[in-house]
Image (cartoon, rainbow, N blue to C red; front, top):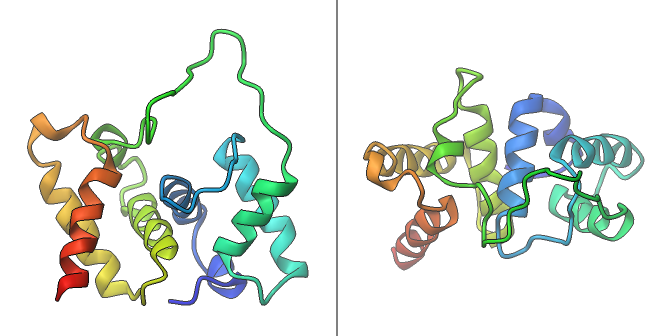
Length: 156
């Protein structure tokens, strides 16, 4: 997969959102405090004028160009590492096709600069699904599940 504007425009909005979540949950995350819908709007406006820019690069640009988002009084504030990106989020497949979960894996792997193809993405998603089959793992952050999977694959 080439995470460029052509690829971005070919995927659905849920996969785009998942990619943003995965990239922003990765070690490469730029300082973006805006909701994913605002980041998605930025990318969809930025990419047509910059077709050769990769999505990770565009997200870094967004981190520099987007104004910090102020939390609403009384709104949820996540101060721990990885916020709410855990088994509860992963298991909330409200769109039926796992597009957000696949997007998350794509975004996280895009940070790692590894060759990424559809079978690899599906393999990681299936391994994460299997991990979260146990209700006792629901509060484990997705990053803490995917990092050992990446490390294991890098060894082979």
